Image (cartoon, rainbow, N blue to C red; front, side, top):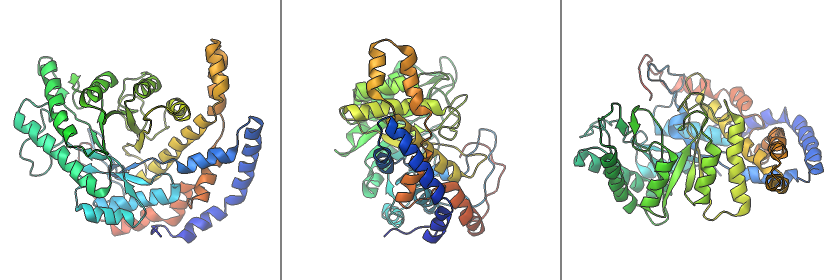
Length: 430
């Protein structure tokens, strides 16, 4: 049996105070859904099986380009991060895997695997880092990595990605995510075509190192740190990359990596249609790549993304098995609380999308009844599925109210006493 960070008794005590109300709310919602021809238990069962990966870097306090304000009890290393991730998994029962970032999380792979297995955690996609320089790194990525004009720098970046694959093989990971900050800040700084060709050549070398049962996820981002041009700047370029590399290459969609007002759910549909949707980094944004908590700004958009995902799931789209991961930066909240709520919000969008009357929606679409088509979606979105999510957590050993249980257990105060305080005042995102 897996170990737990917060005592089972503490979780049960928290649940005991809330179970009677949950039972009533669940029964009431079940009655209302039954009138719509929906079996609440079937939705609950699907929610119980749905999981989203936690990014190891997400349990630390983030920052901005201007400053960073550390929080109490921040993890000192990857092993502290795994313990924080275990708390999230324990209370939400929605985050069974951790996604590592190398070299930030570099450690003996066997020790990492053992540390995660203590808590029943697995490992999701490996993430390489060639957008910043590591300690004792021979060549700098200041002017690019996989698209750098210098062949030696490109080779160094390729070798780093191959190393990530080898670490992931030991951990049981089955995917590598590659995001680069390569680009330019001035017109004329780089030759667009040559930079992209160098990138493709380097990515082919990485792709050749993939095990047969692995997938390669490439991630696009329209700007930052390159503000004039970015090598992998949008989903169209990302799709070209996936087609060029081969059957094991897919596009990863980060919800914050788009211009404001871009129709992300349509991009998701296109990538599903042509078999190149690899997965997601869930977060939210107001201006750009804000990395805000999932569903904190535009929960309806998150629902519309899941509407496309559920449509593909129910229709049996070929090769459809996207990876799900959170990717957030927490500057003013407790990272564990934010990640718990974000995991719940992703589950919420999934549950709401499962409530869509697909037959009615298709009928209205075919009849060009725009009003009733959109109302069909909103009927599902407006449904309060919280009792379903809470019941799913309760049945699988989690907390009816994860944040309340977490605060009642006093975990943050406990680790703050054990982990030395981190000095503040530094600039830059970490």
